Amino acid sequence: MAIHDISQCTQWLDINSNLQFIANYKQWKLTSVFQPIFDKLDNVIGAEALVRITDLEGQIIQPDHFFHSKTTQEEDKQNVERLSQAIHLRNFSLSKFRDLKLFLNLLPTVGEHYATNGLNKDHLYQRLRNLHLRSDQLVMEVVESQAKDERLLQVGMNRLSVYGVNIAIDDFGSEASNQRRVEMLRPHIMKLDRSLLAEYMCGKPFRLLDGLRLAKRVGAQTVIEGIETLDEYDAMHELDIDMFQGYYLGVPEALQSKIFVEAS
Image 1 (cartoon, rainbow, N blue to C red):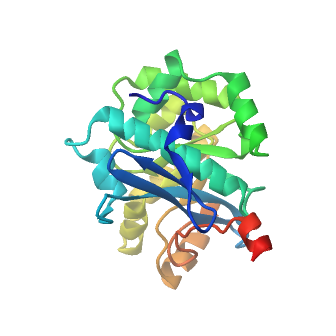
Image 2: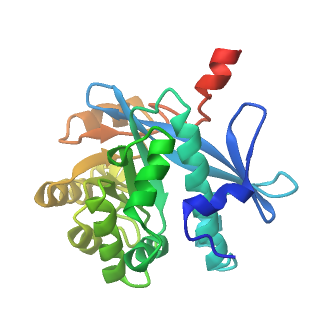
């Protein structure tokens, strides 16, 4: 059964011993972790929600493998993404970060779906109000995989933007996260792939600098992803970059529920 709306996710949701929302879907268990994102002054401005997937035996399944594998049914990919968003929103709303921005990954195929159905402004606002969140706190990151129809994706993202949701291009410089998609979607935020950072550190600055120029041309803020060392941190701070993310700054981890903290 296809899940067309986050409100349909309830039957698959559960709560673990740490008062974290999880999802059990078919043979997979989904949990949330969050990686902080920082501004130039090292203030946390938000967090990217990431799903962790395990099978019935407790074996870890890498999300990239799950979402890019040709053996995973498209319906399962979309359902897992919907369920991931449902638990991410709930866990974020109960955390210390709940007044900041929440970055959520979005499959292009799900974005295309928003163009024709599956997106109701009143339902969206009501769901967020129930969690004491606002639409302008959400940053929907269109991941780098191919869309079936880029024009439909554009329409879907425009609808989200009209509702106050921020649009981001994830992993710019990788696969379909390219100049054409940026110019078509005109995102609020461009997240620059770690490969651009790595090339820059090896004396090949061109792709990273081109990405920064493109962001400025479309009026997008920038996040550099994958900062893993002090040298990379210092080098990126010398450039005109707005936000910073990576293991050197903060690792992905579960966010404790404020309810759990206050009760312990």
